[in-house]
Length: 502
Ligand SMILES: Nc1ncnc2c1ncn2[C@@H]1O[C@H](COP(=O)(O)OP(=O)(O)OP(=O)(O)O)[C@@H](O)[C@H]1O
Ligand SMILES: [Mg+2]
Image (cartoon, rainbow, N blue to C red):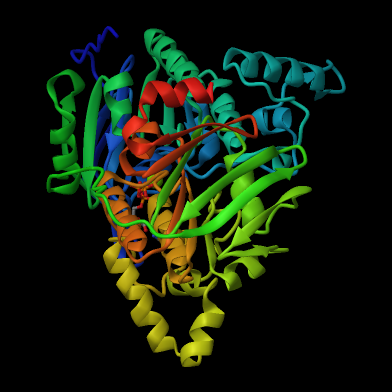
């Protein structure tokens, strides 16, 4: 890709000495940052480094406590989202901002609905749906503009959020982790759009924990660490190792710490399982101490399979054999009680209680365990949860903090801790490292190995093929609700997996 940023011109946007404090945290500390027209500027940093806070200041959601913003060389105060939009700033938020009870078209044109009629003005619905269709088509997304957002899977939400931002005439386009639920093809389409917007002179600010994306689309990269500006570099001149080092202040030795370990007897068998409209005739088995990767494209129905095993989705055929006996989980409570844990993909929708503390969120699933064993003891709860917070390096003022005030990636880490806390014999991790920084990924992989080493069976659903290849003992590939291939670790390659998935 040709890079041409003319840094000689002055930036369209400049942050100077921006500081933002929250109770117990300084999210940004004197941060300087410049964004130029026609560049894709990647912003990276560990979970909680302050990236989304910077975006929200740009969006007018938060006001900085100190510092100044310059827009086209003029001092600007961005009071609210409406003003940001009028300045030509459009944003794809990390935690989607869609309204579930509205349809896709209504969401995309929310608050800027086109109207018709000279005397009596009314909303031009046919234009809304026509334009929504056109935008979705350009992104190769097959979603009916009239479907209710709440009825659609997460991956679609992300595409709609992107479509919404792209539908505006923007001078600055901000994407905060836009690809975490997208398929390879969708990412490809998105990158295409980004490139052409850049050609048109749009300034793009791009945030991602998928470091390989930096090289694919970035012109420049800026690194934040603990709310502080570390530096900016041209992508051509910097190695990924260097970027990681700037982010974490240390080197990551081995991203995938997999090592061989003894694998025991079969703990869970799935026999001919089917769930209407989702998947059909799925069979496989999982051994104690084994890490079984499930690969496939987004939408291959892997999440549905996980939910069905977990008792959260009805099945119409087949059965489960768990610890040698036929088992039936009618709801997640049954599954948890039997020793099956699930880290859901859509962590915010299932499993997370936004206004409860970090500690309660970790122990909520295993509360009965805590009570049964020890009686409800707040100090014990705090000690246990503090240990997880330390292990996973969660950035939070305390375990009493409401989980909703944590950064996206730190919320994910808490949900992971929750699934670990349940003491399960079978753990299903659905996209465990989505949105998580490289340093914490390494921690999570180590934890997975530790759990497997204790004899637990682990199913890891992941859309990142390198992660599946790097961490699994055995790999299944799903496509359109069926298992299309199985590989041993030694035989698996990226090409073979893709071939079975496409
Ligand atoms: N509304 C809020 N109230 C209190 N603390 C907040 C709030 N928003 C963010 N923070 C804190 O500010 C810090 C920076 O958070 P931010 O969301 O900007 O991180 P991030 O770099 O986007 O991380 P991630 O990669 O996990 O998304 C974190 O410690 C977070 O807990
Ligand atoms: Mg964030």
